[in-house]
Image 1 (cartoon, rainbow, N blue to C red):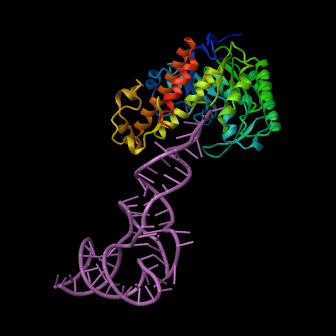
Image 2: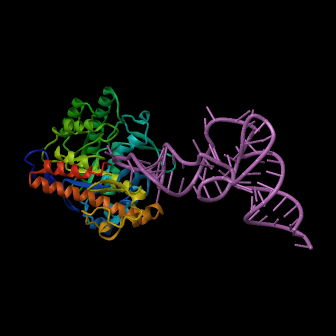
Length: 374
RNA sequence: GCGGAAUUGGUGAAGUGGUUAACACGGCAGAUUGUGGCUCUGUUAUGCGUGGGUUCGAUUCCCACAUUUCGCC
């Protein structure tokens, strides 16, 4: 067995951990945030821009690439890195499991797999654990994910139990189907909603199947903050220390901090890029909406504590103008800043772990972040 | 100079003799967490050119004026 993850240090007062993950396309340090590049592009950004942001790893989506351009096209091009000409770091593909949550109806989920209607042309599609892994093998990302069901919230205990058992069977099938075991790590996914015993059961059984890393799914699907943190706690204590832990779909700064404190290593989220396209910026002093009139003649940078390309070169007033004029450069500059913001947050968390002062960091961060009363 | 038509919010415009003047854009604000969707939600004219009149009541009918516009001399 080939261990990709190396635990470098544990923080003294919490479960936070510093580590690194090795792939054939490079090593990234954790905790780390992954920007989402659904369609083999982090929306609006060029590879140069991604490289300058020092993204440890980015995420692409199996479902979308399966539909367009098709996994065979990507395989023929020499794999996702070649296809994108993205050489600066590792890539992870999501399995398409989340689309069960967002596109399919409960009645379309069977033991065999999930029936989808293509969002592009409405045609009927069928995705199975084997098919998902086969597509991911062809796409060729460094980390690939088991095909799971991410049930909506809330759902009954009975349904969740049925769902996690099915997800476990799918995980087993997917693992058997996985061919590129030498250069593609395969991760298992823990579900179980807000039910402590189901999270424990799902975690233990998934770990028994022995994956290269583990992720916690089914979080940030509409539950409150307290429940969200419990979901993490319930699952994470049953995950082995020598494997990477990935909290799926989480990207609010506070959630990243609280996840890291609980022992999470990596996160992914559309938040920074979606917020950017909608004209919002994450700053040290809270989230701001650049469309607000108060920025019309504000010639300062988005965040005076940020040294990203956008903050070094552009003013709020100009970016506001771009956003209100629907110019794509606005979304691009804000995407650069928002990703830089989360990446910097992760670097600061890494420092805090080294210095054993992560709780103090959290306190100071929140004091500034909520100062503006957003 | 004569005759006709028009005049509704920032814009384009619906509309009715009777409580809250449609809709769209724009403006203002909010949402956004394993991305279908630069998307979604809320809000935005105490007033319908001005002054009179008719009427229980007029943005809606009548008159005058102003402005715009079309045609004719």
